[in-house]
Image (cartoon, rainbow, N blue to C red; front, side):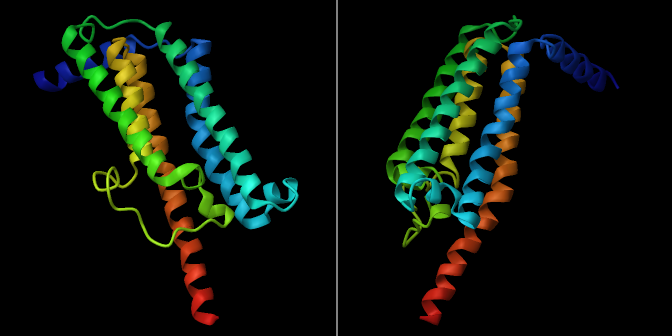
Length: 209
């Protein structure tokens, strides 16, 4: 019972450092939830209706670049809003130590490597769900960073959020980082079966040809 009480006190103390009524933090939460839903359902809408390609005068390449620009811009906006929001939140004396600051730098650095290297391997079209626009790869990429984790973009981004939270010693940042990770896991459940369906349809078309 004593251990349970200590855990309860720890959680209560952790949540006590978070001001959920802060407008900047609420804005950060909105974009953390909105962004992955936007790019996932936006790409799915294009696959089903060719909406963006039609707006781009039938050019699916222009469409995917326009879509990529919007996703990238929203990502930069979300990251800046998150940073500014957590700086307004309370600092935890427990986290405000050289150890956690160093751990934060390491998490942010490794997360950035995962994101940058996966973008390099996939290219702009591959990074921003180009397969939903009709740009399908012939084989799955299996070397670094994809030999470490299945979704280095998502895992790397989650680590970068976590790194910033640890560096600034903000419990609100830790909570938001958990939400980032959870949202990525949710969109994986939506995205991966649909992507597999796209490739299965291409395989069926090749066999029928």
